[in-house]
Amino acid sequence: MTLVIGIDEAGYGPNLGPLVVAATVWRVSAQCENVEELLGIAIAEALAAAHPTTTPAGRANGSRPLWADSKLIYRGGEGFADLERGVMAGLSLVSLALPTNWAELIERVGSVGPSAPASIEWQGLESLTLPRVASSDDCLAVAARLRVALTAHSVCLVRLACSMLYPADFNLLLDAGLNKSDILSQTTLSLAATLRGLAPDEPALIFCDRHGGRKSYASLVAHHFKSPPVRSLEETAARSAYEIARDHCQIEFCVGGESRAPVALASMTAKYLRELSMQAFNTFWSARVPGLLPTAGYPLDARRWRREADAAIQFLGIDAEHLWRRV
Image 1: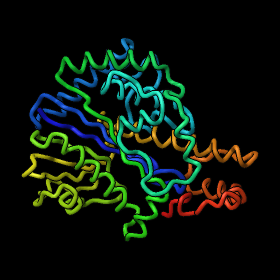
Image 2 (image 1 turned 135 degrees about the vertical axis):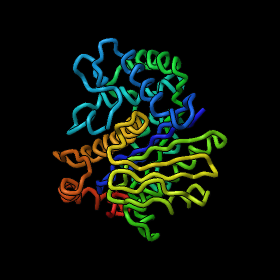
Image 3 (image 1 turned 90 degrees about the vertical axis):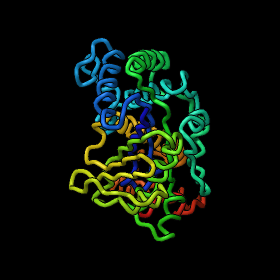
Image 4 (image 1 turned 45 degrees about the vertical axis):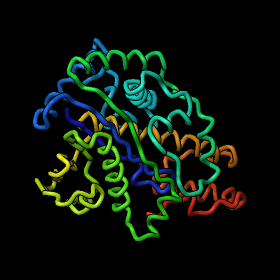
């Protein structure tokens, strides 16, 4: 049996809203050297079973694939139903039921709220009902078909998990001396090490998307896994891979890591959680600033949004450190 963990992020670039790092955890009945091939076959067959009319790319009737890089699923405000559907199907694979509100979602994926004091604009998350637009019955039916196909290959989705850093948390880490890239790597590897601890006696493969231009991760892996020495297997422009021999674990950071389904579903989960947060954020502020257009939080539009919302921000006495991620 081999533990497979896929990790990706959403919200690395914006000034507004959280940075979200999400992971999927799988158990595959195969030796490490055979895991990728078996997992690829199992998931391809599962996606085909989920939609009997799917194309080889996993698309049903010309729609978006169930699991893929979140940027292919949700772009420019389009595709939220498909994004939610894929994540909800994954959550149902794990626990046979769907979360019906934000509190239940937190319970499923971990402590996703900010640890530092939160601004009041996030309080709307507590009143969200789920799923927002996807059909619950459809998500459950898709998950049921996925489960049968995956089980036939002795593959199981064990967990979806995430860490979220809202602006106050993010800025505290900057003040502690970390830079933006450090924060992403620290959050990613801390989550990876925690999840690897779910089955410390099993071999493990951990797949991460490449963190910007960072090429070397050996010291970070050794620090977070507390398992030196870490042996470098490859450090190239496309892939950085390491072996933690004492823990029977390999971890790699690849350009285009979302081509692997475990990373793709993590990418979608991270994006979904961030989008729910931004929906609550925009609902809060649009109710207080007539005519204020919503924002996704990326730098150019975030500056526009901040100018237009400035009077309301000052009136409510919201500290910029709790609102604006310094990058």
